Structures are given as structure tokens and as C-alpha cells.
Length: 325
Image 1 (cartoon, rainbow, N blue to C red):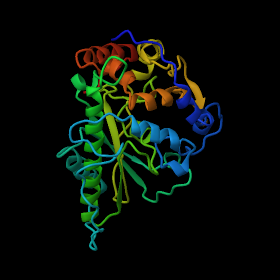
Image 2 (image 1 turned 45 degrees about the vertical axis):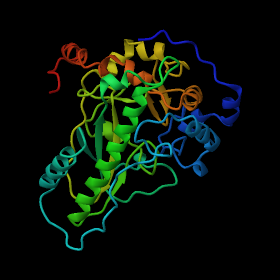
Image 3 (image 1 turned 135 degrees about the vertical axis):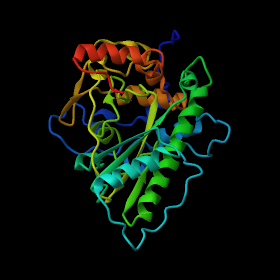
Image 4 (image 1 turned 90 degrees about the vertical axis):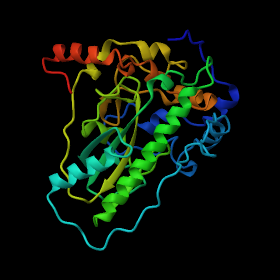
């Protein structure tokens, strides 16, 4: 871990943060509701369009990177849904979909029923199932995420994983469409209708961490998400509990390492759920000026390959069950 310098946003950056993002995200709200579009959506759907432009203009370039920030590259065109629908048991379709997703690109796959709370306000999703894909980082590259001390080798890996997620979600959508069922891809980093983290948790890909990202028993915090919605009959995968949430209660590494001090020590009420929350108004200016971030997931102890097995064993003993395989 580096000794990071205290961060103070530039006045011109703060001038672009025209309204607080925390109320938009539902901080302090006690009733559940669908999430509102925010920084990662098209600029006409939120008040941070100018800040998005500033982030794009300062974006670091990597060899082979796309011209525009967040653009996907080398992904297939969506094919029409086949006119003849293949029939079969939902368990078989679930197994085949998972195997297909894992074979070319994805590192983990979860399946969960659609919940209206997974859909951003102003959008509509009609498919009853969500397939969530996990794309693991290269830890050695992720360690070099952008900061004052590095030009960000980790930025290239972040872009690579989003690109993998795009290719994987489009390829899986096309496979499902070839079976005669509807399917729509939802890759990152630019958001669309689908909120990815809640269905990823529900489908067993991990737990929410103090840094606002997920922690996986396989990859720690070092992975990205993509999604596919479909009407293909499937079988859900179960959520997991391996101690990530309990560990975050006492760990302070990400809170200490976050340059803008955006990570809260305790859970907060957000849209009717008490959970970990990252202060939007502190995080996004740093992200915009640094053209990316990821420091919190890189320094997370769960992300370190040599540490994670020990943490899994320790937390399994505390929780009184066997560690996940």
C-alpha cells in the first residue's frame, strides 16, 4: 500500500457537481424504490453530463483501447431471435447457458429471477431472468490502479475486463436467441436499464463490501460484472455467505486508502436497505480528475490471491461452516 496524499478536488471539478448525488442514490431513504439513473447513464438522464465529459477528456489511453471512454470493442452484432424455439427442462438450459458463458470469456456465472428493484427508473425490462457474469482482473495489473503515484497499468486491465464482459454478454445473448428465446446484454461500465450488483449478490457471485463493490470468494474484489436478461426458462443459483460482510465491519483498509475519504465506516440506510455506501459527492470528483480509480478494490485484502484462502478459512470458522470451494 502506498502513502497516498490527501485529496482536494479542483474548484472547476466541484463546479461541475451541480447537485448532490447522494439524495439521487437514495441515501437516508427508509422506503424501498427502484434506483435512479446516475453518473454512468447517458448525460440526458442525470445532472452530471459535464462531469462525464471531463472524465472522458482526462481518460488514460491503453494500447488497443477504444476511442471513447466506456466504449465496447470487438463485440458481435445481436442476431434475431430464432423462429423455432428449442424446448427442454429449465435445469438443462441453465447448465448449458452457464457452460457457454464460461467457455469463451466469463469467469463466474450466476442466475436469479428478475426483481423490479433491479431496473432503473425510466427503463423497462420484460424478461423474467437475469444472468450475471463475473470477469476477473489480473491482480498484478490491478495493483497499479490510477493514483498520484502511477500512470495506471490497472486502468488497462479494468478496460480489458469491461471489454470481456461486453463480448461475453453479447455472445451469451446470441446463443440464447439462437435457441428461440429473448435475450438482452447489459455490459459495463456505462449503465443501461439493469442494476448489476443486487442480482449478482442474489445469484451467489459474492457479498457487498464496504467499498460499495462486491467481494467474491473466488476473486475477492478484483472482478467486473456484465448481465443478460432473458425469457429462457432457467434455475436460480443460490446466494452465498462466506464472511465478507462480517470482515468489512472491522477492516479499515479501503476507508484509509481512499484518497477522497468517500468510504463510510458503518452501513447506512439507502432506499430502504441498511448497507455499505460510498459517498458519491466525494468519490466522483476524484474519479473524474484521475480518469478512473479502483484503489479500494485493489487494496482490499480479499483481492490478494495469497491472502484470500486464509480469510475464507478464518471466516468459515467464525461463521461455523465450511469455506466455499
